[in-house]
Image (cartoon, rainbow, N blue to C red; front, side, top):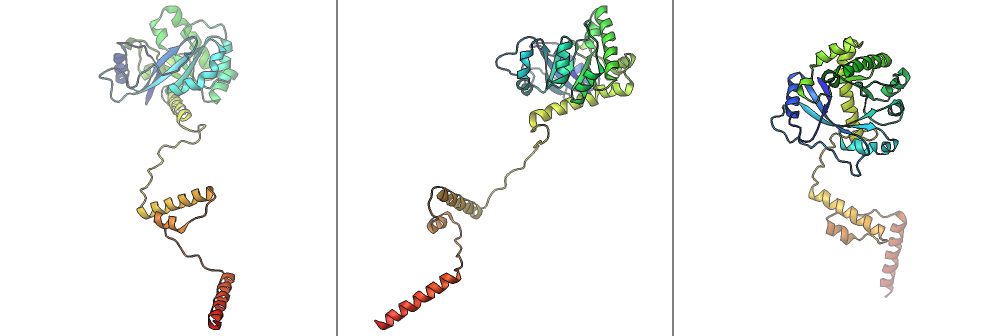
Length: 306
């Protein structure tokens, strides 16, 4: 299965159905629509991508996920990343400088780190910083669409930055996406793998960047949303069996008994009988048996003396 986890989404985009259909023809099985947020987060965070999509004739075998990309411009946004992650399927961050990149690799809880490789970066990628992000489960994204559709300077920056990123990360934890705003900017999975091979990524790592690594992003993000600390995930707990009338009556009787004990009252046999519970006879102790026998003899002697 091939993945493309970065297809830009804009409300009212008439070219989006055509792009999705073309990606399906190219052999992609899973696609993520991307909504980009720049600046301050809104007071009420909701998913900007509707479900289901208001388009007809979408490819039937194409799985569509919802992704949000937050541009890291101010540090106070980081406190609401958890709330933002609950509204979407995948959470990505886009650093703008070395400080925000270091913050994204070390402490931010996100799924994807996506750097704009078409810009001239004033810093260099470091292996220690990138390996820390990969060990924590984050993936580094390379987008080829903007470099193919932009001018020569953007294409030159994309080649230089992608080569540096592949060298600094040693080919680990990378994923390749299109970020194509139209169908003309999309390429087949093997074309993107061959393009990454020219940039210095091995063909095996390139295949993982189009299949294995994006899949791990989807699965990990889903576990964060549906499980408890990524450990316990209840898929189906089963249905409760229907109780029989006798069993239900016993349960009701026990409930009444607990309520009576809680209220400081004693259990009454009449309440159990009304509830349909079976009242079992409690065996007498030896002391009680002797007391009753003595009382019976005393009563018998009194009758004879009278």
